[in-house]
Length: 412
Length: 226
Image 1 (cartoon, rainbow over the protein chains, first blue to last red):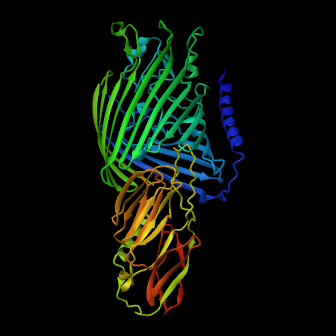
Image 2: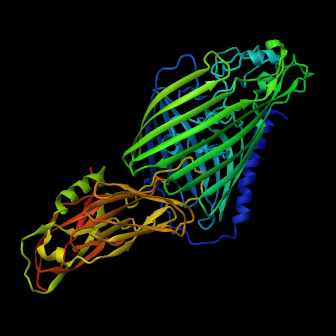
Image 3: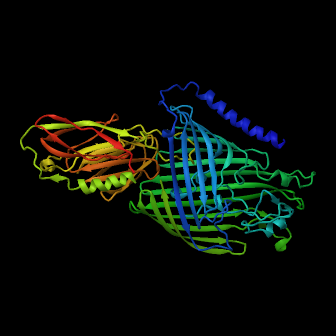
C-alpha cells in the first residue's frame, strides 16, 4: 500500500467513525442548551511548572522524546476550548518549555453529538487512548515529579535508523538518549519511549462511556512510540483502543492495545528488496486505578513488541519486546500535605549476537526506578513538591543515579 | 484573584459583623429586596478545559447564581437569632450545586455525591480547612462551618469543579437568583450598609434605611473586577 493511499485510508477511517456516530445517535433527541457562538464560549486554563534537580549530562535517565529532562524543566501550558455550538468544540494546548518556543502540543475538534449520550469523536492531534498516564502527563495529574519509564525512558531504537545486526543493537544498550545505527540517518537523535506521552499523535478517535464502562478507539498516522507530528513518516496507520470498567468500590481496571508501523518509509527503503521487512509495533497493556478516602493508587503494565528487520542476522525478522510496569500511590496526610511513591521496572527480551561471547543478552539495558515525593498545597492552585528518585540500569555508561527533586506547580 | 480579594474584604468586614447601631428594637421587621445586574461581565464562568480528556463531559455550568447580598455590619441582636441549620451542596455532572451557598455560623453542610463518578471535596481556606477524601456516587459527607468567612470549595479529582460557601454570623443575607433578584427578610428597622459578594464582579456598598414593617428596594450593578 502506498503512502498516499495509506493516508487516505486513515482519514477514511476517521470519517467512518464519524458516520458511525451519526447513525448510532440519530435517534437521540433531547433538549439541549441554546448556544450563542462568541467569545463567551471560550474557556481558558493552564499551568506553569518549574522542576529542579542536579544537571544530568551523562546518565539521561529522565530525558524524553520531547527533548526535555522531566526533572529539570520550566514549562508553561495554555489550554483552550472554544465551543462553537452545543455539539462542536475546538480544543488546543500550547506549550512552551525551557524557552524553546511555543509548540501546538494538541489541537483537535471534539464532536459531542448528543447531550443525552456520553459519546464523543475527536479529530486532529489528539490525546492517546492507551493506558492511564499519557493523557495527563503534566502537573498535578502526575502523582510524582518524574514520569513513568514506559512513557518517558528512551529505548535504543530509532524510526529513522536501523541496526544491520544484533551486535549493532547490543552496542547501543543503555544509550537511548543518542543511539546510532549504520542504516539510515546519521544525524544525532534520541531514541523512542514505549508510549509517547509528551508528544501526541494525529488522527481520529471515538469514545463512549456508559454505566461503569468506558470504551475508546483511535486511528492515527503515527504509532504509540512514534507519533506523527507535522508529517507522516511512513504512511501507515495505527489502530489503538482501551476498554475500562469501574467497580463500585473505587477500582477502575482497563486494558489497552495498539498496532501500527513505527519505522520511517525512507529507512525501510534502504533495506534490500529481497528482505521482507516488517515494521509493526504491537502494544498491549493493563491498568488499574483505585481511589478511596485519602488513598489514590495507580498501576500499569505495558508490553510492546517492535518488528526489527536485521539484514545481517540469522533471523532477519527479529521481534524486540520491551515491557514496563509501575505501581504508584499517594496518601493525603492532611488537607495540605501528601506523600507519594512509585516503584517501576523496564525490561527487554534477549537477542544473540557475537558480542559478549555470543550469549543471549537483552537488546537494551533493563532499568529499575523508585521515586518518593512529599507535596504541600499552599493554595488550591499552587503546590510544592520535594522528592528523591533513584535509578538502576543494567548497562550504559552510568548504571546507578539518584536525583533530589523540587517542583513548583501552579494551575488556573 | 477576584474572589480572593472579595474574600479578604469579606473576612475583614464580616467576621465581626455586628454593630451597636441600634435598630428600632421591638419594631416590625422589613425586607430589603432588589436586583443584582452585571455590566460588562461574562455571564458564564469559564471552566478549565480538559484537553487530555477523551470527551463525554458537558462543561456547561447549570447553576448561574453567583452573587450574595448581605448586611454589614449586622444589627446586634443578630447573633442571638442564629438558627442551628443544615444545608446541602450536591455534586452532579462534575459541578457543585449550588455554586454559591450562603449559611450561618454553625451550619452543617452535607456534600452528597449525586454524580456517576467518584468525587472529592476540599478547602484550604483559613476559615475552614478540610479534605473529605474520595468517595463514590451515592455517598455523602458533612462539614460543620464554625467560623464566618468565605470558604472556596474544590474537587481534587476534577480541577474544573469549584464552589463557594459564605458563612455569616447573622441571618441578614440572600443569594441572588438566576435573574439577579434577592430578598433579605426579617430585617429590623434601621439604617444599614448593604454589600455584594460576587465571583464575577464587584460593586460599591450602598446604604439603605429599612422602615418599620416595610420593604426597601436596592439594586446593584456589578462591574468587571480589575
